[in-house]
Length: 113
Length: 110
Image 1 (cartoon, each protein chain N blue to C red):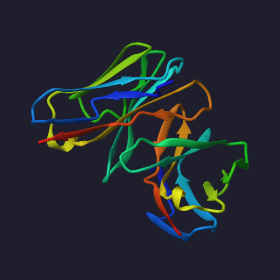
Image 2 (image 1 turned 120 degrees about the vertical axis):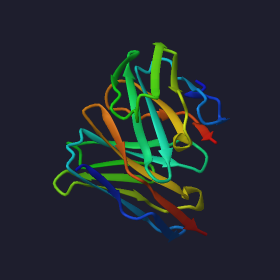
Image 3 (image 1 turned 180 degrees about the horizontal axis):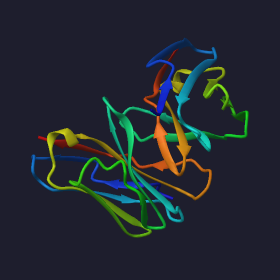
């Protein structure tokens, strides 16, 4: 298995532009998580899905952020419009149901200028 | 308020010694606790999981303890090696949600 695949690895965009981050979880994993990591705030859970259904989006910073999971093999995190304070590394992770560890992707480093 | 504290930002030890990292929490009732390793520029890698009713878990040179009375987990790396140098994160899982500590950066000197 290729693991959790995220794209792009790096994204530089101008303030006000729309940004879409993509994630392909491991086949068979029922849970998908989106995290954001910054030096100031560490690793924060934004939203997670179970069987493609959003379960908890209380970590999504504001309405500019949205996430979808149209099928079991694909999820997107969209920021519109983007702001400089959104600059961070965004990770996607997936797992089996129950007490298992999460498999993280390599992350997308987003820079908003 | 809920809080997770990992003992220190950085820990330096000599090769061959045992590294002990601490994860303390308040106002949580976690179902289980996980430990991850993160190298620069990479995503966290899962190492070990321990459930609330378990006291200790081992995997090769790694050992995790979980004391729900003290609200503390200890993570030990025995016979440490320079390759163990990385940032180690603890994560509490409660109600399906995960909350990560800020991590401890371990440096093992040869």
